[in-house]
Length: 255
Image 1 (tube, rainbow, N blue to C red):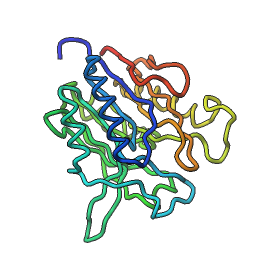
Image 2 (cartoon, rainbow, N blue to C red):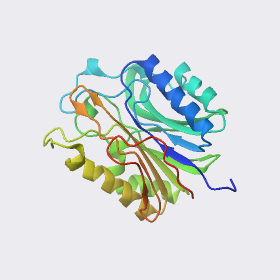
Image 3 (cartoon, rainbow, N blue to C red):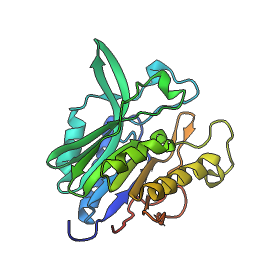
Image 4 (cartoon, rainbow, N blue to C red):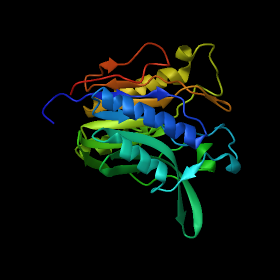
């Protein structure tokens, strides 16, 4: 692509209602197309939401799970057209005769699926209901070589590094990252998880010399209050984002 890329990261709430989440996602994708966005990164749980509790989640509280070829994913691809879109969802797959659930992300355009990722690194509570992925994969897209991570993956330097070594120039990190559940602050921006969320974004962009596109959920799901704080971070740790945790989804960066 000869002209500068236009990149957008979304800070938005997506709950358990699949139909409502799909409608909202399609609206954001349509707005991105009208705005000339090349890469749009939606939060984890765009389709079906996220867990309600991370300390002791129940197996019957797993968000609505979709197979890899779900019609909802095909609908987003059809709407995307030339826009490269990354979104997260709970994926169900049958392994050894039993259903397994994964925190998953998919990258697509109107031409179909370009790449997939299953979350590798899990906080303790999440591991009670989700299976872990087994690696990090870079893939080619209309906006260049891309890799994806899902929230907690970014706390481990080797995740981003493995993608950078595979030739990735842009890393999309899709999150459903909440405020601290053990030491709640009166304001989201004062929360320790808020500081860590921003720290990881800047550090991973700088250490790997990549463009880092960080999306996140907002609002409340059960016991979890999500931070927002979507942003695009350049290789020099320059950050583009709106003010406050509910930053506007449209943030553009040239690379």
